[in-house]
Length: 317
Length: 317
Image (cartoon, rainbow over all chains, first blue to last red; front, top):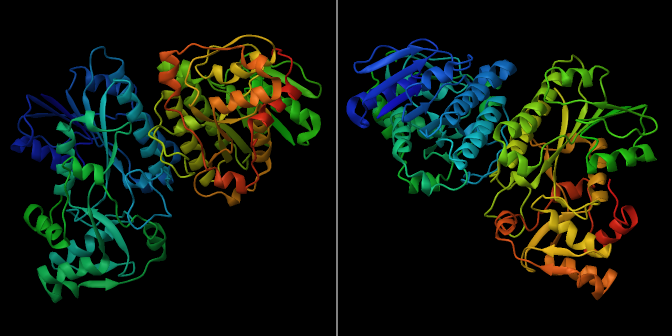
């Protein structure tokens, strides 16, 4: 099996690559693509390519990969700041890929697409059902929702065999703190675990929906071999996760690393970050995905344990 | 006020034009655009333009119309038969229009977009709530759903002031029978009212969701002056209508035109047409739209009455 990973240089792309080369999926060939060539991995070939460039999709498909993981995107902050770039990368490049696949006779690869909970928008019920309506509140969420719809239509027509995964917030992200509005969700645990101070910009009672990088990797692997005949007309699946409040995250940190670690968290309310993250989803049902074998963590102790095993001490991945 | 109607040569475009020139909306200028120049109307200018052509949107916007009705589209059968054309016309041309509007500084026109119930897909509840999930089962429905999402995002960003109207099946369409799968919904009433035979290809118990051409015109006019500040993050509204079975439609025909008219209907079950229309929606709540003053008929006697007043005897419009 020939596997292609788009967005292979990102955090999840690297984790997925490591899982596949580690034996999680059999492959005869593995191609890693990103804006900058992903690091060399034994048994894989790396290519630097911008999927938004004319002809890029055709080039990547010339050897007809059987399985395509499409994780290439710009993040929500950038998509909100740059309207044209967001639509060009997050919608048009995906569509160019789908069209290039559709143009090839007798070719219908499995395509696993990284979507996002951002396809949903407040007001939310406490737990978002699988068939909640699409009301994105950001351009990023709009682009993901539009791409999901396109993926489902092309799959219905037999032009490709798509699955879109609506990912929870991934926590604990390895590496350095970044400037994403959601970055504190990882840093309030990661920094204290590494003996470093961290800033908490929101209230302790704020609740959100999480899965570890390892769980996210598992979602992609599960989607690769899923019987898509079991899916309904929508090929988009809300992924399982763990609903936790900041207070619950901190309690788990205390259990794992002690009060000294907790004392490294400094509360500095930030109205800008609050305004962005306060309306985010608290939990998803993910009934369909769970029934199909997608699984995430069931406690923050587990999520911290995954970080300690896979990514501790802090390193850039 | 400068008003622009895109798709002005179609049945609804002509009805809307007639309503506006008849005084339904004040205007200083009225521009009618379609693939073929719409018929000359006193006080209006007509232009033949393909919105899918490069530069077409910029040309139409050069005098900054304050109110744009966007009814230009290809129908569901054609969008299903020709994938590239469907996306080019129903998605890309709309997006080119939105982008051309967004590119103009200090310009934020009201844009009323003709969407469709086809954004929803079976399985349905008996009555579809306003926040039912988007699961189109056709490429046409997918294109309409994607355009709705884009319209909502651009409206949220203040680039335009959009309202998308999810129209019921319009009945009784004037003119000759056409080859649309849904054509029989009009022809089983229109032909007998004109003393002509008609074919019924589906079961009498089949139930669907209707509004008259006059009601649809009213929807567009209502949307033109709506306070969009009252809408939520989604700018798409399911329109009110009348839920009726074939049997109820025929009973209304009997009341209005007698048994002789009913006897002109010949039952010829057609599995191809059945397969297309059987999964269609039976009814919508349209709670939000009704509260905002959108209104449709409440009986098929009324719908037949509208036809007899506005379009009888049969003529091409």
